[in-house]
Structure formats: structure tokens, C-alpha cells
Length: 405
Ligand code: FEO
Image (tube, rainbow, N blue to C red):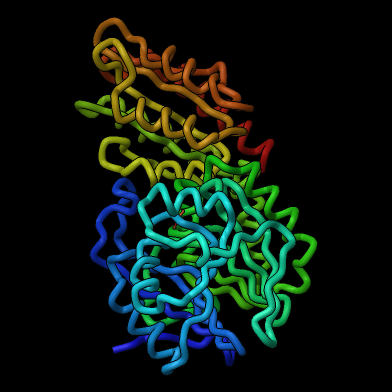
């Protein structure tokens, strides 16, 4: 049975939800599912805007068929060809073989690489600033390279103000019958999933996202709907969403606060992190979060690191190096271009203690990272002789937080 929703009178959401997928891109855990969004515009011509992951292919085809109501499908407009959106293209071609594809030249290359059998005469290549008229509706195309792949574009409907934004403004989490962001308490229910999606999927590409935001600034007053490929459709509160994107894409923290991430084998490092958090609270620093790096998927750590201004890394030394999950966290920070944070270090080891030096070296490879001079070196566990250094570290962190706050 079909399950679609109206965005406007003649624009329909025809996507679906996947709550069975354990790992998005086979790497990021999903606990609340994900939606794959696609849209149908019913004008003098009919237009399908993007497709979906094959996991929901049958639901998608039922939705498109129901919305078309027996009309042929004239156009398939492809903004992004990553298979979570492009996997159903071939099924669309089989069911509506006369459909014309509208997409970028780079997308055509990728479609061929993924093995889609598309006749060249079926494809209309478009570039930035081109327009297409489907009857009442005229759309224009805005290239959005590296948001999140090189071929990506966004499409703006000049008639109804709908921005089909591809991966931009997307989010993890299934829609559960709702469609619009204002049908949720987004800031309570969704923002963490939206942040984890952005930071882990698009986080590396802050500069291209900034370029897209600058292009969008020229039409921002004309945007009435933001229709991403994942998550809810936006029809109000654009300022809230754009403010989040501004922070994330410039690597500016959303909040002044301290994230403490520890790597502990037998509890010595963990207890030190606990004592530090208590000392921070005593100094009035209450916006703190603690994570065990071994039991927290790195995508959550990255997400919160984009949120908070300060980071404490506390790690045991392991095989003369950084404890591997902590090393992985540091590698992910580098891969995702994380920058502009104030950091502090606690190192531990029962002999040949090196994790602090090595973590400092890794942090110094990132841009605009300040590593506080105050640090703590533990030999196996926190003892009385370490408390002076731990107090100095808490003082330095609290002073830095208060300065930024
Ligand atoms: Fe949801 Fe880059 O695809």
C-alpha cells in the first residue's frame, strides 16, 4: 500500500523509512532508523526528484505509482547519485522506460561507474544556472560539489520556492508518519541525529558547504521549503537550521562546554576523568559530557565534538602508543577536518608512559587547536601526588571556559 504525503498541492513526498539498517554506509550505527526522501511534482509534465535506497524500493515504487495516478513519468531529476538515493533509478527506468533523466555531467560519469544502463539519449545534462520548465513550475540548478559527493547539485523551484537540497540539511532518524520539521520538537527530538548525520557524513566538507550557503544566501528570502534527501522537510524556522549549518561548516562550537573522553583499561584513567569533572563542577563548569571511548561509537564522539568548545583526552598508553579506540577517534577528527577547539591531556601508563606526547602530536596536526600546557601524567592510577597537577588542569580549563563563555 502506498504511503505518501503532500508537501504542497502538487508536490508529494514519496520516500520511506528504513528501521532495519544497522549501520548507515556500513559504518554509522542507526538506533532510530533513517528516511530516504524522494519527491514527485505533478505539473504539465511529471517529475520525480531523486530516488531511494533499494531497501525501501518496493514502497517507493508504490508511492510514485499512486501519486502519478496513471500518468506517465516524464522526468527523473537526479541531484545526487550515492546509492542510498540512486539505487532505485534502474527500477524507475524499467517501469517508465520513456522517462528522461536530468542531472549533471559528473553524475552521468558516476552512474556509469555504478553500472546503470542508461541510453545517452535519455539524459539531459544540466549545469549551474540552467533552467527547466515543466508547465507552471520552472526550476533552476545550483551545483554543490562535495556536498557530499563531487557530482551533487541542488534544485530550486522558482515557482513554489522548494529547495531540493540533496544531502544538505538532512538528518538520521525515521520520520514515523510526520514529514515537516515543525511536526516534531526538533530541538529536543532530532537535533542530535541531525548533528551526527552532518558531522560524520558532510563534516569534512565545511568549505564546500560554506560555498553552497553563500549561493543560497542569494535566494534565501524566496525559499519556502527545504526538501532534503534524509529527514524532515522544513517550511519554517530556516534561521534555526541555517545557524546550525553556519556553526558546523565553520567548525565553530555551538556551546561553551567540556567534553571529556577517556580510554581506560582497569579504571585508573576513568576515575581521574571523574575527579576532573567534579573539580570542574566545583569551579562552576557544569556543561560537561563524559564518554568512555571504548563503549561509544566514534560517530557520537565526533558529533559532540562539533558541539562543544573544549575537549579533554585521557588515555592509557597501550603497546607504547595511544589506546587504539582513542587513536581512531583522533584519526576521525583529522579525517573530518575538525578544528578550532581548546584541548587538555591526561596520560596514563604503568611504564613507558607516552600517550600524552602522542595525543598532543595528533592534535597539533589539526588546524587551530590549542592544547593547554597544564596536563596530568599518571603512573597506573590517580594518587595524592597527582592532585596538584589535576587542580592546575581544572583551573586552566575553567578559566578558558569562562573566557569563551
Ligand atoms: Fe544520503 Fe551522500 O547520500
